[in-house]
Length: 195
Image (cartoon, rainbow, N blue to C red; front, side, top):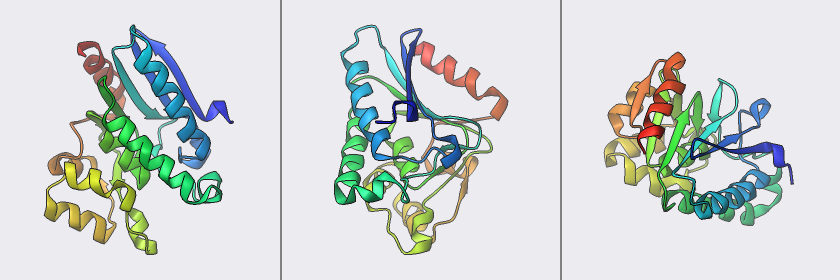
């Protein structure tokens, strides 16, 4: 297992999860999914942990979805079922979850973000379901989209596959706050300290 693909650390009673696949725009591999389950169990059972923060390494991408050229596709349906189970795990996690969106948040990355309780995004972040542009419907994240976004906007999003700005995502109810990129860490830290 590629332990370095998902970094886990605890600081000031917050469990930080960083998808560390910057060269692949922080795509999700089978290893990343397995590590998320492992570390979520640790965070849940650690009484010192008050909340969870999920982000992507670097400045370009929070998460660009599944690694279709890697282990997610080689695991077949099991890999995608594990990812769907992970989204449920995050959405029902018993401690508050915060997504720190620092760049592109696409396809399965949108699912990660929508599964979190609070989403804080840099103003230059971009969101969307580009898989529809190559004939794939965002089935795994569809329920999360329709739970978080008004129906007409959700349909527009999943049918057109257009990228959305952070402001558009805020207006649609997908995210909680938009801040300048250089203020993202300060805003996330402020929210985490309140939780």
